[in-house]
Amino acid sequence: MSKVNEVEIQKQYIEKVKEMNKGKKLKYTILTMGCQLNENDSEKLSGMVEQMGYTKTENAEEADLALFNTCCVRENAEDKLFGKVGELKRIKEKRGTIIAIGGCMMQEKHITDKLHESYPYIDIIFGTHTLHKFPEDLYISIKEKNKIDDIINIDGEIYENLPIKRDSKIKASVTIMYGCNNFCSYCIVPYVRGRERSRKPEDILKEVKELAQNGYKEITLLGQNVNSYDGGEINKNGKTIKYKFANLLRDVNNIEGIERIRFVSPHPKDFTDDVIEAIRDCDKVCKLIHLPLQSGSTNMLKIMNRKYTKEQYLELVRKMKEQIPNLVLSTDIIVGFAGETEDDFEETLDVVRKVKFEQVYMFIYSRRVGTLGDKMENQIPEEIKHKRFDRLKELVESQIEENNKKYIGTIQKVLVEGTSKNNPNMLTGRTGSNKVVVFEGSKDLVDTIIELKIVSEHMWYLKGKI
Ligand code: 5AD
Ligand code: SF4
Figure 1: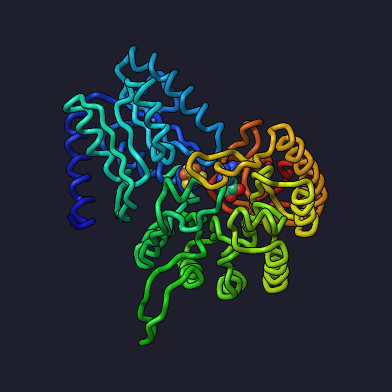
Figure 2 (figure 1 turned 45 degrees about the vertical axis):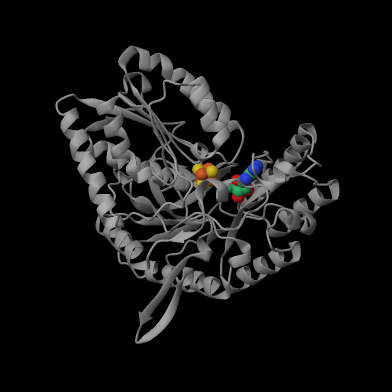
């Protein structure tokens, strides 16, 4: 079946469910775990569900449809899933709520086995490759009262023009590629999201242009490994060229109305010069680049199958900083991967001291069933992992405090996101370097980009003044 046909078929199911739900004032709730890719998937699910006649509620107690989009990258997510599914049982008994669980964790057999065994009241289980078929799954579940298991292990096709309900009116995520080919030995993603598939350049650019026309100002290009984006061969000015991530950055930069471009996550091994040049040349590309390090030890990087050494990473950082004025970096680090010695960990601290990241996302290594890392014998005891994590955290926090001081007195462009969670009288937004800024101002400023003077720093946020 052609891809266009498949989307049309799902649109027909949307109409059928909408017809069944007519006049019923049904509500849905959606809980999303994990990364921005998953959030983007949830926006697509919400788009389909809203077209089928459901309105959103944050309160699961009043939901007729409860969706859970799962992540499996780290362990604690599993406890959260089973806890939530347990809670939903009572709500289902009360009001017949349809329970649908999807996302990355559903691609893991030991998880779905456990769901079938211990939570038989779940109505729909769907995986990462069948998200677009949710209207059909829901239709069958309602109509035939069947339990649906819609999981395949073949790389999903890329379906364009599915409905989408975006969370923000000013910031939008655009997935440019699906899957991952890298098989880092700690990581489950290649097993649950399949091999790399890139969207066509014209489809991505069309989506961004439409977003710009609808008032969106900030675009985040998403993929497990964005700089291995492969847009195929295209004809440009009479010449056939290979359309890569650098081309895409330049083309998105030319779209009128877009003011900020971000992307996550690139892989250091694929950070070619053309990408560095594109970041340098494109004024809208934020000069905060996320560059996952994972470990600072060449030995660990080898075991992790990262395909770069400590020295190569530092050289890349040097080159990027030299070529891109005002560049700052953020990173991901895993502490306590199998076999990590005290010396290996010191190497990680050394890189953190040298690079002075703007932000470090720190993770304690969590064994994932089916990965090479899980099969290794020299696992690190939890206690040592936690001690190392605390040491890294201490270093990172001292650097952040130091770094924050540099902002005081500067003028920053801030994209205003809404009212502050901790103080409803204040507004909150983000700088190009992704720092949270809290300030006093009129609610009319929400969803605009304004200039603020930074007056003080408070570890996890800055205070600004109009
Ligand atoms: N344990 C801990 N952290 C992990 N990450 C990926 N897999 C694991 C794991 N098994 C981290 C990596 C990655 C980020 C998204 O999550 O740092 O970059
Ligand atoms: Fe995202 Fe990976 Fe989690 Fe899936 S497993 S939601 S791709 S972080």
